[in-house]
Amino acid sequence: MVSNYNIYKEKAEKAIEYVFNTEYHRSLGIPMPIVDLLLADDPNYITGLYYITIDQTWQIHLNFGRPSISFKEFQDEVKVLTRHEIEHYMCCPFDVLTHLRMLKHIADVYKNEFKYLGIDINSCCGSIANQAADIIVDTVNFQRHPQETIAGEINWIKKGADISQCPRHGKLMFLTKEAIWQEDLEINESDEELKQIAYTLGKDFLEGGIDNKALFFNKAENYTRAFFKLYVKDKNDPPKGNCSGGQSGNANDQTSGENDSGSGNGQQSNGGSHSSTNIGSFGRPKDGDKNGSALVFADPDKIKQAIETFASETSVEDFVQILSMAGLGGLTEKDKEILWFSVQSAAMIPIEEYSNKGSKSNYMYPSTWKLGDSIDDIDLMLSYMTSSKLIPGITTKKWEKNANDVVGSDRKQRDLLLVVDTSGSMGNVRAEQSNMFQAILASFGIIDYFKSINGKVALISFSDRITANVNWTNDYDLVKNNLITDGDGGTKFPLRTVCDVLEQSRKELVTVIITDGEIGNGQETMEYFRDYLNENNRLYLFILGKRRATINYDSLKALGAKVYQAQTAHEFCEAVLSDLI
Image 1 (cartoon, rainbow, N blue to C red):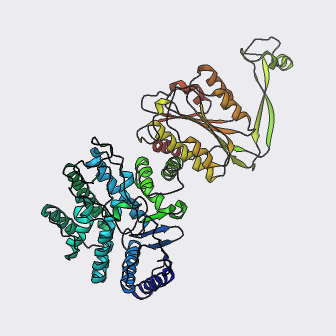
Image 2: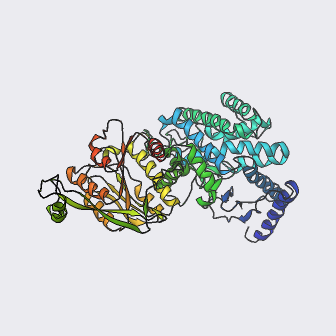
């Protein structure tokens, strides 16, 4: 093989050029595939390894395994595999968003109908989606190149396990193709019930057109439903033969996290090798990474638009799960949560509070000194000029100082201190009915507004301890990253930390507090914020939940604090916008 490496590689490249230039008329808009030949010690040597990486563009990778003896047979196989990968790009899944949506439809079928199986759907969902897509793309190619497609399919089946001994769910993809094409793929299936299932599924795939993109999700759901029904049947009545070979013994095996109540290794004691912890291991598609997905994402930033669109369609829980199924590297669970909340917070909450950075005109005027005022404020000369008799609160006088903004002085948006309650009562970040979920959503909307005006932001999150403390910054991603946390612990308002952070800025500020209860620490906290407001700062309180009364904050409201009570971030946004009108 090593001595013929260059010859076979040259033959492969010529066959690929023929498909690209002659069959697709150089109009694909994607680069030529990257070609390699695997050596005999590679775990994928028997079948080869084929997939698409998505970076700046869709890049096909064709790593051919053990070649046919005949150069013509080898080149025919190369053409079949090249067309197969091209049609993933041209037809199904066609684009990244369709791929993500297909994964979600498959996951939904599992969660709604087969969750009791306890399978790790994350590890096998990509393979099931790929099998459904393979039926579509191979049928498209069969309609154009029937003989080469049939020969390629038979060759692929023979490279794998002894299919006659494989479990029913492992045969489903091949039997469905056989039913649709009405051609003999040399499977020689004797189970009439299984053949009828494949026949019915084939009719579902053909209905409305095999390449009708509007029906891809329906086809994927039908395939998933049939696949898992057969998987259940295989668990209850496993095949007696030994299914082993190239396709089930390579790196593309799918393993579930199911806990089997039988033997520790899941093997059948009667000699049958169908493991209840192995799903998708048999009859695998022609392409795929270690999780069976035909698409490998090199950089999430390159598919940002598709991810953001998908985020707008799903819950945060589903979004995180599907991105894990798709195998997006470089993103942690928290990264995915941040991305989802960032998309949802597109409706920014505009905390428009300005201070004047221009000059001010100062003037003094006389007013009445009243009981309770500082004794040092009495101006006796002014009082005696008013009356020869001092009557406290009536004839006693003092001087008041006032400052007016000079006409034409510039206004500047205040910087923001965001204080978020992360106590246990706030709940879980991913639970959409929780106060924590709504608090994060509101916080992201506020931060995005300050990002749009390039304002500085500081963050304090608290429970019975400080859970996050980010000092004044324009690094909005850093603030968002520190916001993502599940509620835990008791509630103690971090007054000392708030004081320290506010004192580090000499500007007039706006503070936003988001909580589901009292801000705590009693009179001390209220007195601090009264002084804070009297110094021409601004205060917003967002109180989450139904039963929280705002009457305790009336004294702060009288000094200009804005207090809102709502159940969702959307309601807070509407309330703030209403006040701006």
